[in-house]
Structures are given as structure tokens and as C-alpha cells.
Image 1 (cartoon, rainbow, N blue to C red):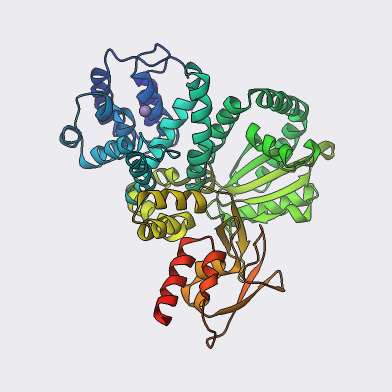
Image 2 (image 1 turned 135 degrees about the horizontal axis):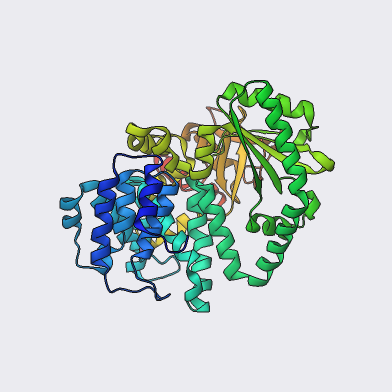
Length: 481
Ligand code: MN
């Protein structure tokens, strides 16, 4: 939004939180005074930047302290304001958030300098203290990417690459899909302008061609659900430009991308999700292999929804995503949705769920505890968390997230160290494989253990990717020697 004002922000906040407008107005006036006279490269007053950052956060229904910190996020770095000032004028939480965002703002992943590596470590471990730091940082990055046009071409490409390497995975890990897909599209636009333009045209054409078909389906499903008295809302979405780009790079034809077009159906309860699924299938034939139940089998970033691809009007393939209203908030904003869904106790629930349910978090804590030197830490995070990942099934059907190149040994230790320590072989999709077999997406993995086993071998250290497996094997070998 151009010419955004504080009133726009306050109006947005009032949509979901009417009581705390004054403190946000106060944060704005401080930021406004402190940044007075400073300009962005675009020539605009600097204040437009923190204002937009906070507006992005308000669109995600972030809480009061996050919004204040969004407005103040550049004041420690660029003005005479101190952390103690912020604590005094606002509160400790706002001060810690601004301080956290400031510490991580100078990070440089590709640098070899120790100072930069230390900063990089701070951004990463910042999540473990307060995940809101990362949420503010993502909003900051999003606005900087939106206004990247004023930077040199070199800077544009550098920022776009860094965004793809670090911020897109982070957004995915906390489930913030809206931010993720916008960051992807903006990055692609600067990295490969020609390809971006070409796919943008394709996307517009598809949307134009299928408008009629989607609208008709939407109306039909709308009628059916209204007849059954199921409270609902339906939206249309097209895959983002980067998503289409990636599929085409993988060799897919446009007509074979089954989730190019999607209808999102939101209903009130889980029971009604399944009823809606039945109703949709009775009207439109599903493709059996494309059905996914992420409600009882959530993605590792807690995304929950039913996905079914059906033959829609004019025999077009249309993915239908069915979920509850709350699940939809999580699917759009990830952890930030907690503010909205859990009101009062959002903060504690958020950090608790982060620890218990988000698999990347455990890996992060593990890497942080094992690597004392910053360089080792940063390299391992790159290898383990920011590299390509695979998703495999346990015998019970749970999904485990592992770095690409992982072996059944990594899998065994990820489940439990006892399983790794007593493992003798592994079966993948019911076939016995070598312990150093490279796992693939969707493999079903079963570890065969024997309490009389010799335990992990020294040479397994070269066959594992994950920090936990390496640490546990070393611990076991130490006991043997
Ligand atoms: Mn900033």
C-alpha cells in the first residue's frame, strides 16, 4: 500500500484488537521523531519502512508488543534510543524484541569473518529465545524485498539469494506461507527477471482461462454446504509464480501441475472438514493418489488441511483444500496465528509448541549445543536446516523431516537414541537396505534393532548427516574405548 499512514495501521489493528491502540500510537510517535530527517534510498522518509513492517505484522494479527517492536525495530541501530529507554518507555518484552532484531540485522551467511558468524548464530538461536524476533525479521525482510528496486543490481541479486537461502526456509519452518510465497516471488523476480516475466504471463493467462470454471465450482460447493447448514467460506488461489517456476524446472508440463489452481474451503469443525470432503467427492471425481490428510498427519511445520485434487468443471484439475478457520490462520501466518487463536496465553503456548511440535526446532537446539565455534555452527545449520529436505514416514505413519542425503541411521537416531544404538539394519518400503542407503521423499522406513547388537560403528560417522546422530555415535564409541 502506498502512502500508508499510522491511521491505516491503527485501523488494521482495531479489526482484531481494539484495546491497545494507544501504545501503538505511542511507539509510532517515538519512531517518527527518532527517524526524523532520515531518508530511504527511494527518497522516502525513513519512517515509512518501520510503518510498513508493523502493517505487515498487523495483517498477520500480531500482538501488541510485536507491533510496537516492528515500529521501533531500527531505532537502536540508527538513532540515539537505547534498549534501556525502550524498556522504560514501553516494557522489557518490546526492548528485548527490538534488541534481538537489531543483533541479527547485520548477519551475513556467506561471510568468513568471525564477527559476522557470531551474528548469524544470533539470528538462528534468536528463535529459541523468542520466536517473535524472527517474525519481525521476516516482516522487515519482506518490506525490504518489496522496495528492492532502488538498490543496485548487485545488491538486488545478493539480497534475493540470501532471502532464498535463509528467510524462505525460516518462513516455511514457522509455517508462514503467505510471507514465504511472496518472498519467493520477489526473489525470483530479481534473480531471473526474464523467467519471472514469462511465468507471470502464464499465470495471468491461466487465471483468466479458469476464472469461469473456478467460479462455477465455488458456487456449486457453496450451495451444497449451505444446504447442509455447514458454516463455511471459500476462496480461490493460484500457485505462486515461484511454485510454478519450480515445477516447470522439474520438467512438469503446465497441465500436469495438479495444484496450479486451488479452492480453499474453510469450515467450522474437523468433523465438517471430512463431511465436506465427502460432499466434494460425490460431486467431482477425485484423483485417488492426490489425496492427502494433513489434519491427522500434519506437516512438520504444523500445516493442517485436507488436500484432494478433483476433476472440476470442464475436466480441469482443481486442488481442493479443506480445513477449519483456525487451521487456515495457521496455514497463512504460521506461529503468528497463535496471537489470534489463543489470545491471552498465546506467548507461552507458542514457545511450548515450538519445542514440542516443530521438528526443525529440536535440530536447531541440538546443533547449538554441540558446536561451540560459530563457524562450525553456521556450516552445520546450512547443511542440516537450510539445505534441501526430505520427508519420510515412520512405521506408524508419522512424518519425519531430515536433510537430503540422510540415511536410515539418521532416521533411527531422530526417533530415539536407543533405536540408533541397537540398530542392525533397516527396511525401506518393506525392502531391506544398507544402513547408508540414501532416503527419498515418502519412503516408509522401519529400523530393525537387536539389543545384542554391537552398536554403532566408527565408520557410521561418515554416513550420517544430522548432528544428533553424529553426537550419539561419538558418545557410544567413547563408552566402548
Ligand atoms: Mn528494517
